[in-house]
Image (cartoon, rainbow, N blue to C red; front, top):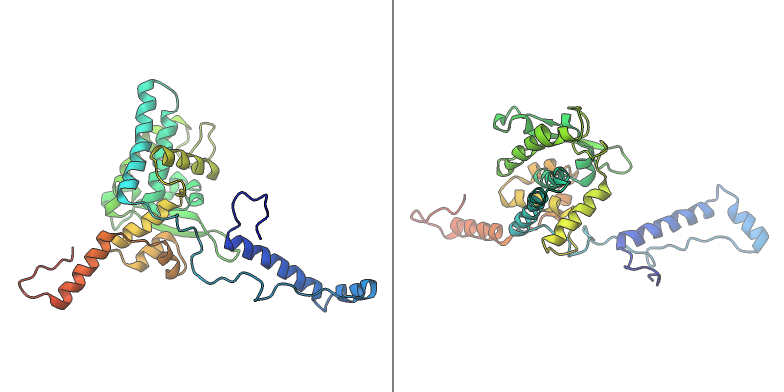
Length: 295
């Protein structure tokens, strides 16, 4: 039962974590290699018992236990969010106030998170040197790929590295990165190397700052309050699937070990599903005079 002092009910994963802690502690107390059971029997006349069993603890029954309200952004919502972020820069400049460079940085951080499907920690950990060209796509110049060095580890391992390629549908990110690195970032530091996203004091922006800035822009854009900055990563995965990228490519881009994890992030829109239906109809009922609906 949730304690009355909690503002929000504990999530299933949190409750399962509590159960695991209690189970492990009871395993330690009842382990015959130690004398806890003997000492308790001699002193109190009873011995410790395991109290966490399958029938009274929370089981992991579904792959995704996140709140249903958390989802990918629609194309309109994404465009509106970025418009609000850009408009904030223009408003500060028009009013002659300080903070335009900071607002530009914040806008570019969110766009980069979306354009490369990054986690918050991955974006915060980027250095200028992590932006590099892709020999197979010279049109993107020095921003053909991002070397992610602080990817999420698994089972207690260290950070996992991966390379995220710039894709043609999101090539607009290269112009924004060039503007930040060549013109705005030098106003924060004289060094050309080091952290990509700097504060006014020359330190890296924090995870909490990104959360707060996204929440502010989200509220200004009048988007649902349940959306977090992680929704940009969900949106990236969804969009790539909708644009026809292979599932394995999407999985590698976002750094998922299992394809099932990528599938959890995917919430394709009606346009994609209708296109799939049209292709199926063409395969089954189409004739030589019919137009192939495939892009």
